[in-house]
Length: 246
Image 1: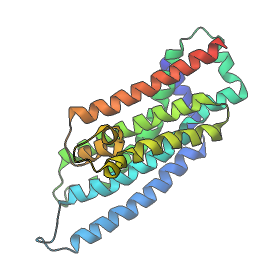
Image 2: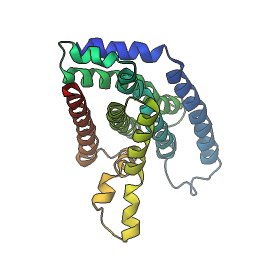
Image 3: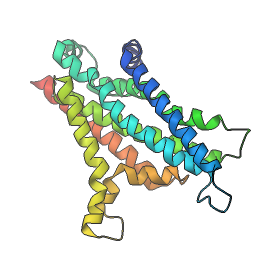
């Protein structure tokens, strides 16, 4: 049943132009950033280069791809629950002999399949240089993993926001609000003038993605993305359970 739900969401996402527009626009901007980084890097002397080429590419390409994923996840998720609540098709799912947990997992898997190509775009750009210049494939793998984990968290937040209302536009705004909060909350450390990583800094996804982009795969960063992904999926399940009881 989970596979059937996920397959249905993937097919529905592929036939709509939104996914292809996001991929096309994302690739155009990523290609421009890629060429800009290469031009700036080759224009510097060996003693002027502050970081290796792989690090320059991961910190620019993957950081921008994370922003694109943050914008794309709510747009892809809005129709999965909010759209069904609006047109009444979710009532059929709620009445069917299927567990809500299976519905949530299936829709999350569908979102993951749809957004994964976006997470692979920066990797594909960097791999063009393989065989031409030395690349740190370990750092590249860590950056790809970090971007994908961040995208999964964004998808879980988007899915939760989609379960809150039957208005897709309102669901997108709610998801953007939550994602913006998780993006800027780390700046509270600067306001409080704290030296060590506080709770606010830990809550910011930027802080955890940064270390993965640097090639450092730390258990604390992996746990962060896993915890919040599962947390928002659990909230989605609770929200749908309450709606089924109404």
